[in-house]
Image (cartoon, rainbow over all chains, first blue to last red; front, top):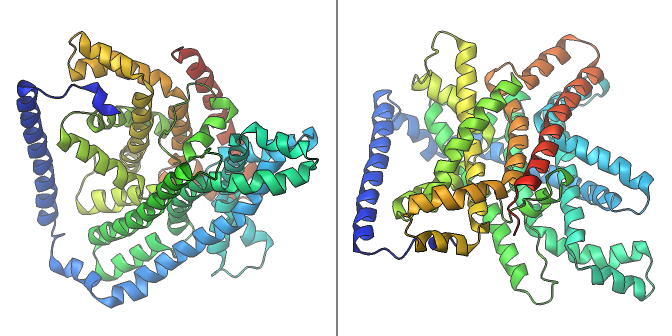
Length: 301
Length: 207
């Protein structure tokens, strides 16, 4: 699309583009070189700092357990949040005001609060009112925070997914005499699930990223926390940050490409209704932000 | 403190995000590549990692103190703004790019037909329309940013999350404190969402 913004370059524009390319590349190279120099200056490029990552010890004692904890928390949060989210999403579509209104209040409330506050709060509640051992508590708190937040986001996803289906689907179901519950369970939900899959997978990226919060503030031993013990051990702060950053990037890129692959597949397949829900469409459903909606905007944060 | 963090980071990320979006649609391949790489990398790193790195890595190792070496609180604040800007700009860039895509092709074609250059057509024709189209998505980014400022607690900036943590540890009424902070955030984010949603509807280009 963006190529419409400029013509196919003529000889002068070509020359100008080459000059701009060279200048920009030179600037980038200069920046990289400067970063490299500074790192060298501060002795961050010494092989001793990077060497630990080539041994299996750094991986087996720190990074892999951390990564596993990250994945564990993310998976737990997703598995618990999904049914909860579905429940609230369907409740928000209910015909009865006394079901719809409380569900809407709960969803909007938890969507408006930072996950971090939810985690801290859950942690404190567990300290006071439960006898969960202090080893397990961070995991419980992190998962609770993530579940509360993501269940409400997923509720919106489910609602958007069901609303994205053509109206004829539910009308046809009513016409052949199905009841509301049957329509939902037999006709709408199965189709909505395929429609929602890309949005759900991209929500997983958000969950994975948010587990890192628990590492710093609740001492939950996930990847970022494992990094600090590792860095304390080998005194390689910068190197460990770069390695952990790469792990996160790879993990999330896999998830993102999974989501876009699913999306492409669903758009192609003839059996579906052709309605596909990406994470962006969900945000647009928020009554506060209707209008001025641009499709394919940004993705969830 | 939360509000201050939000405002500074919002302005910073809007500028940096617009620049990134301009790079991503520009005719120069190197700029396009840089923009794409930046967005893909930053979007996939947790904000927590970025903020903690800006404190531990930038400040402690490289000595980037942003002119506040002696004052730890100010330094933490500036580093937090830096991290938030770097992170949020990627999302602003994506929102803007999608906005640019919603501007009808005819607009850009007409701009080219009357002889405007790339930067002229982007500045005068496409971006003004794109901005009006993405007020809604940008509002979502702003709300997410407001919530994300709590992450700055990780490097000890005295914003809402830090405050709540210390208060909860010192006082007995956990529930009440939690409710107050939750309410505070609802008050912060809900009007912003409503206001910008209304603004977005008003500003939307009628087609």
